[in-house]
Structure formats: C-alpha cells, structure tokens
Length: 71
Image (tube, rainbow, N blue to C red; front, side, top):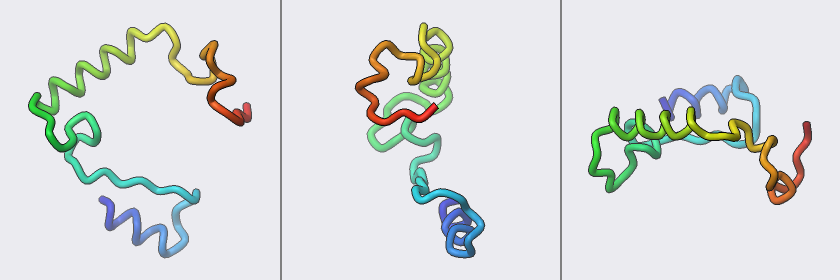
C-alpha cells in the first residue's frame, strides 16, 4: 500500500504535501512492541473514541492550544 501511494504521488495523482504510510499491520494500534492482539486493541481504541465527550478537536475547550485552526 505504501509503494502504491508513493507511485501515485510521484505521478501527481495524490493531493496534499504530507503523505503518511504505516509499516505495522493495524497501524499504531498494533505497532512495534504491542503484546495484545490487533483486534482487541483496535476494539478498545474504538470504544474509547465512541465514549469521548468531544468527538472533534475543534470542539475542544483547549482549541486555542491547537494553533491556527481554519474552520
């Protein structure tokens, strides 16, 4: 997937100036040194996200700390 993304970027078919590729299966949730199964950790992160009182960083009372936020 990373090679495909880079090939598309080189061909000018990807918008943006920052492209990020994840080398670990499951991304950061299942990164190097993870000892829990990917499905369990991904489900735990999803439950945490779903239960968060604030779902968008721009809705945070700490928004000013985020820097330049264009809405």
